[in-house]
Each structure stands twice: as C-alpha cells, then as structure tokens.
Length: 330
Image 1: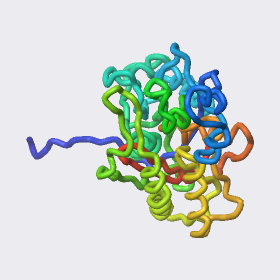
Image 2: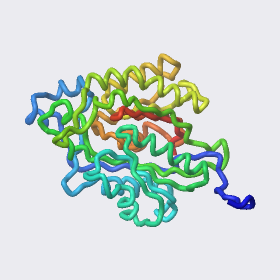
Image 3: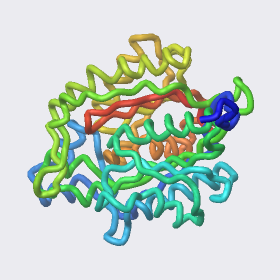
Image 4: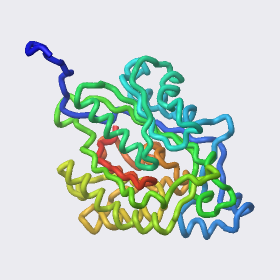
C-alpha cells in the first residue's frame, strides 16, 4: 500500500437516541382457561407461577416478517420518518421458520425499502437490547444515520401444546424502534450496553429433535433472579447513572415473579418508590425479543410513561445471553 493512501471513515457523532416506537400483536387472545382444556392446569396455577392472564397466538397467515413490518411501520410513523430515511434494518428474532433467507431483508422490502444494510440478530430474549446496542454504535461511528431495530417472534410455531412448562408461557408479537443521531451530548438517549453470555448453561433453553422449544424452568428462574439485577446495575454504571435516576424499568417479560424480583433488588440499591415497572407479560405472555419494545409501547399507550422518561432495559434468555442499556423514551 502506498504511504500516501488514506482510508476514509465517516465523521462520528456524539451519540444516538430513540426517535419512535411501534408494536404489533395478533388478534387471537388465548386465555388460561382455554389452555386448561388441553393441559393439566388452571387460571390460578398459571397466574401464581408466571403471572400470565392471557397471551396472543398468531394466525397461520401471520409471520415474523409480517408482524415485524407492522410494528416497524408504526415506529417510523411515530418517528416522523419514511422507509427511505433508513440506512439499516436489524431484526432480532429466534423463530424464523428457516435459517435463510433472513427476516431483515424481507421486512425492509415489505415496508418499501431496498439497497440498505439488513441483517438478523439471534440472542433470543436479549435480542432487542443487542440490536439497539449495534444500532447505537453504527450511528455513533457514522456508518448509519437512522437504524430500524425490530424484535419479532412467532413462538407458537415452536410450541408443544401438550408441554405445560412452555405452552402457558410463550406467545407471539413484535415491537420496533427507530434509532437516530443525537445532535448534542445533552440529547444522547442510548447508553452503553452491558452484555454477556453464560454458555455453560446453554442446555437450559433450546429446541429439541422434534423442533419444540424446551426449557428447564426452575434453573432459568434461579439464574435470572440472581444474575440479572447485577447486569442492570452494570448498565447504570456504564451510563454514569444510579438506580435513583431511573423512571422506568423494562426487564424482558419472562415471568412476572422474575420481573418483580429484579425490581425489588434495584429498589434495595436505591431505585425510587415511584419506579414504573413493566408488567406486559400479564396480557402478552413471553414474546422473547419482542417483549421489551412491545412493553414500552403499551405503557406509552396507557399513559404510564412519558417522553423524556429514563428507562433501564434488560433482556435475558436462551444462550444464556443477556444485555441491557439505559435509554431515554421518545
């Protein structure tokens, strides 16, 4: 290479922020009583163990791509942008029916844009946080200006409806966020990611030889209730904040008892009594990578959170992968 050769990079920007949110759920509501007709369970048993009252299952015509595209279109409208404003699409999912083609390229085409970066991320329930972290870094480095991050899952395709340990928990849906540049340090709205993986526990959640989702529920519960709150604290530390600075806590909606355990530990570390804690699992079930953006969007719609609120996101699931960051809500 000639000594006079210079490789250029785009000018970096100070940081990223969330510009818009959207979500999508199937029409079909599946109650605990309906599931009790198939497996040995009842409404009280399900509510007491995982906190779920109902969940949504997609129709055969619904897909990871179609639900994700619906959520994406709503997020773009919320951000006041069009598909042509995007530079990249990141889809977090673990439930595509085949490994290729990826969801992101199909989703981009469905919302009316081609010729931009489009790729999938599979860290299961931590996927939205991973995708948001990558979007933020792309924007900070100057690689992209606007990135669409979508979490979309059709878990019902992978459920054994005779397996009480999974069929009562998992559900379908999609959530999306548009991430864009901050114009000043005061506008930065996505903090550094705190992430990792416990690969030694990979066997606790997975797909079996019949293509059914299986999990060791008690093992996952013990891991999540002991390991995730410290990761949340790491995300706060990386952002230069304390638990008292947080208005909203949005853990992955895995189990209401896990959500409550994380909130309790953060309050013991100084989180405020008026901390708003996402509990979307009650009516949406566990939607893996879709659960965090969908929970935020539902809380916004219900008036439980406001633009400018500081939220702590923390995703965790199969892998076992985990990741979280602080964001400012759009």
